View 1 (cartoon, rainbow, N blue to C red):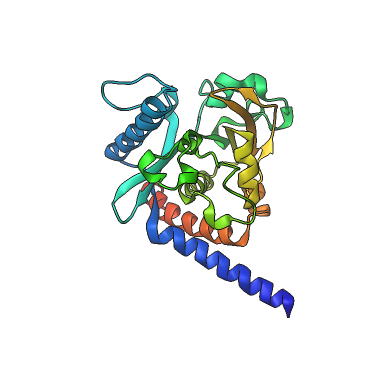
View 2 (cartoon, helix red, strand yellow):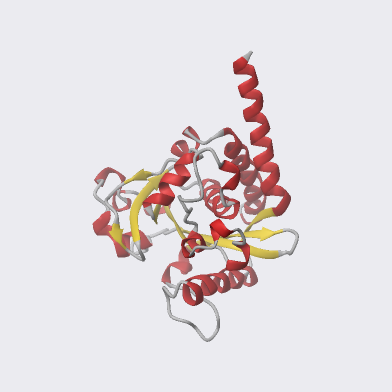
Amino acid sequence: MKKAWRNYQKLREAKAISKHFSSYLSPQIALSESLKDEVYKIRHDVYCKELKLEPLHEQGIETDEFDAFSKHCLIKHLNSENYAGTIRLVTPQKEGELLPIEKYCSHSITDEKLSPKNMKREEICEFSRLAVPAQFRRRAMDKFAGAATGVIDENSYSENELRCFPFIAIGLYMSAASLGMGLGLKHAFVMMEPRLARSLGFIGIKFVQIGPAIDYHGTRAPYYINAPLLFKNLSPGFRVMLNNLQDVIDDQLSVIQPK
């Protein structure tokens, strides 16, 4: 009886989490040039104006060499129809096209078995340039600078407070993961703060750390994940949310990849 009740509670939690996200937010692949411009504007606001990690540009956009072989996701705020965040999936296809982690942080990767240099170019990707505009970080716990790039404030969040997670950042990571799986990519990498990796672990997203933390726009470490690892420990609520995001992303991909 107790087990049945626990399972029922988990099912309720799963439906509530997924409904909460889909009621207010929707993922969008940047398939048009106008949507890509939205991506670059958000990145300019976060990385150039707010965090000052990149120089300001007169055009008000932030781009780099990796955008030439990247796919971009946005999260749309349904009530305002504004875009509440973006993330890119760097997807090299040929020799000479490196992931950002390879170009700038290869010395930090010590796990040779999970090094991108030992994998096929067309099977790897990197989560990169996550950005959440300030106007969508309204709660006091989300106003610290790190929240702009998805970092979770450990002083405000705990393992038992899943309802308090910033849904935009979680949704962006899951949208990028859904896009990667839809494209048939097998291996994903990311440079992130260890505290973000620990916080994502609270909901069952268990990245594998493949090297020590280094000083790269703050303290960051290299991490690896693939589809089996993503689904292995994901909590029921966020599993439902990921499945729903996959359906939306797959529908959008069908426009450019007809079955």
